[in-house]
Image (cartoon, rainbow, N blue to C red; front, side, top):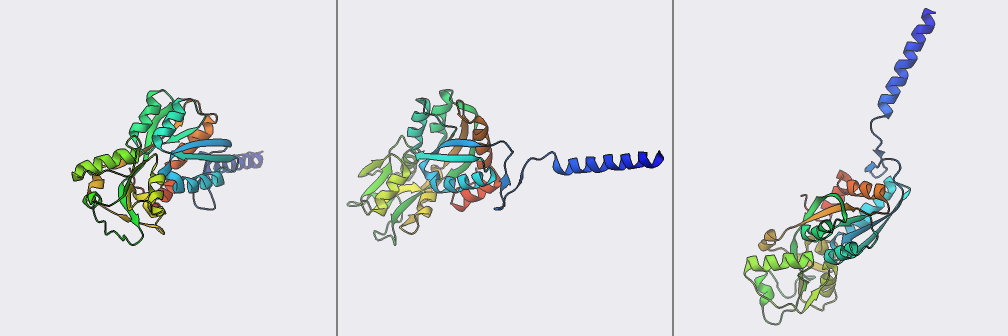
Length: 265
């Protein structure tokens, strides 16, 4: 009897030890070194995101799917103000990632956010010029020289609002030849040779470094944009939405974002 009692005690201890090792944390390492999300994240997840997040979020989406084999992330990129209007007009989506708190406020003021938006990165402007900087552009003041063609984002778009702040800080007045609805469109004008320069985010210039150079200027420090993200109230996949928002704030996702030139908040 004593031997059977001791065996039962030993078995109980082994089972408790096994439970302690396997329980309490439902994440696991993925082959890429990121964290595997909690079990149960599956199905389609639709993310509306600022155009400047394109390259980074494409990679983050792949990493998230690797950690959640049952999930499929679909992105729709554009100007943050346009995306915010789509959400408040009832467009079905799970997550919104904006390039400024002002555009996020449009969504939260309409009651379309679920919870409090989290700022996950920051970004600032550079002057995008043709490779080799043939026009010798070195500052915002240079952009006001006669004959130079400059593209800006429209003022209602976060990159346009930031440009207005930076130009005011530099006391520079200029008339752009075009106002674009998102930063990728402004950058494309430089890549195509249709303008001599454009004010774009540092991350966009870095992503297009084979075609353009980015000229830094001190006044950009006066116009740094915070990027907030939130799950949406009427998300078709609320579990997936919450998991993706959490993943974007993870160390693995932050490495992708900072490698692209974003700054930590």
